[in-house]
Length: 135
Ligand SMILES: [Zn+2]
Ligand SMILES: [Zn+2]
Image (cartoon, rainbow, N blue to C red; front, side, top):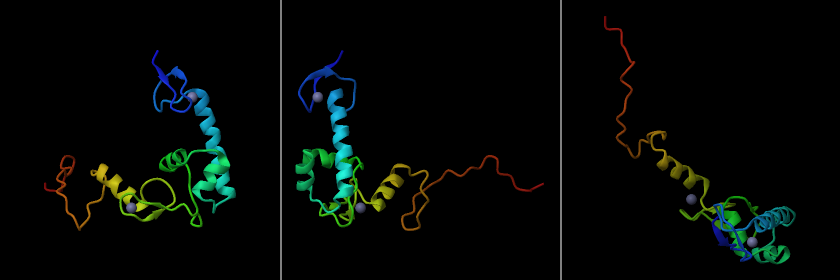
């Protein structure tokens, strides 16, 4: 048993992993999420303050959902998100598509196509198995 205090309601619960939040609270948060998601669809121009007040959800919670890319805002929304890397306006998450792609490429360098601008020494040519007609 790994007892912890729930980060939301403060009750002791059997902690399994992930966020330190008890099951009833997790359920309640999920319900809040569905509510907020629908609310944003119905009220695309609602401000963050309006959303928190009308749904009784904290701004912190909404920001978390945005970071998790669970909430999306339309272009008309007063909620303006900016890419944490380049400052481009985005609709969800933390980074714009461009930065996400380049970050993914950096992570999986082996799969990225070599760009002519920055030549990286990729020296792993599959020699074995290649045969020319030299007989
Ligand atoms: Zn709880
Ligand atoms: Zn960016």
